[in-house]
Length: 429
Image 1 (cartoon, rainbow, N blue to C red):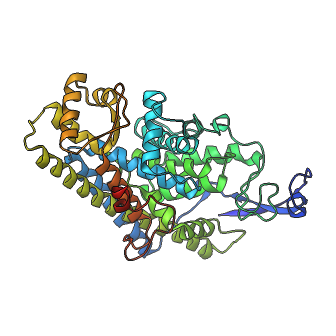
Image 2 (image 1 turned 45 degrees about the horizontal axis):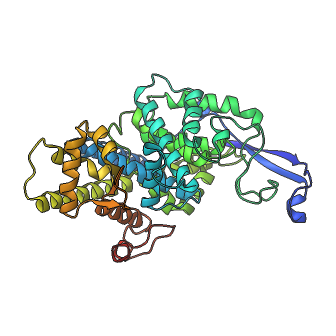
Image 3 (image 1 turned 90 degrees about the vertical axis):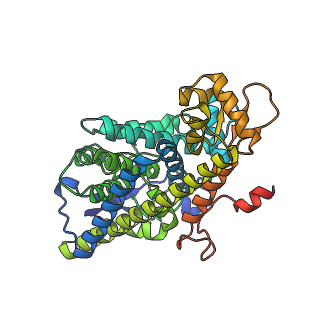
């Protein structure tokens, strides 16, 4: 799938140790163009892909019937953004993320949180990718740059947004030279042609959507065209492809949650996809098959967990209605109950705007929810009050903890990456 190119790193003398300051030879990886790539899937991998596509289609068809499908889609998108960021070491709890989102909507409702702002940027990048997949007639390099720009906006790396790197980067090793790096992507002069090839491949409508999403993600990660934010942009492209191909017309399940949990398999799959300097077609295709199989399996489990979360959300809404005793159909209270799954932190203003209801009607509905113990005011301020829905935040945390376990059950096997604290402990605090 590509070739190694021997290059020389000339140190500028920076670094704390001799190892960091040294010069020397290293090898960068130059992937083949996707337009030149032939994919021959083995029978069992064809089965993996077929099951993943059926699960994605089923999830998206059935979610239409849910009253709060848009809210659940938003919450799953948050989960996807959080988990995608986890792969890059950004560990953010649900409340921190929601507060950072509220800051953008309400202007300084909470103190600025730099780390949480990066995860919010990830949400915006995924939203940008989904919009592009749904609305653009043709994906271009500008589309990809726009997704990266949305990711970086309002963060410490905003100045890098949408700018293709003009210097060598690498993964692993130290920050001063690529001599001990785990992976060195292609040199800058190769990037324009590789990105153009990737964008063209995003427009293909013949190959299987799941295979296409798998290859687009792996190829983008191999190109690594930006100085920062490559992983999150690459995972956003999964959303773009699956939405564009019509397989995820309502929501994309949190595939990155699965890949973050199985990070060793994820890295191994990418490594096998990049089979190096080989004329052995069987070996090359074997690597592609391993990666596609892992990706399809991640899609399948993500669909299962999204369906399970959906059922939990429905049970939660049913319990709210029982506690409220009587909810008139079509009322502001009825609408609020449908929206709160995807709106765990809100003000009367944001809820009113999102629901298209009068401020006074929403305010009255919120007060009823407070009396029923469903909604809780945050802080003691009298104006511009912020409200949270603790049970939704707990469900979000339970969902994330569950998917951080390789077994899908934290009692059988604990989380293998940073996750929110146990919700039972949160309830006592």
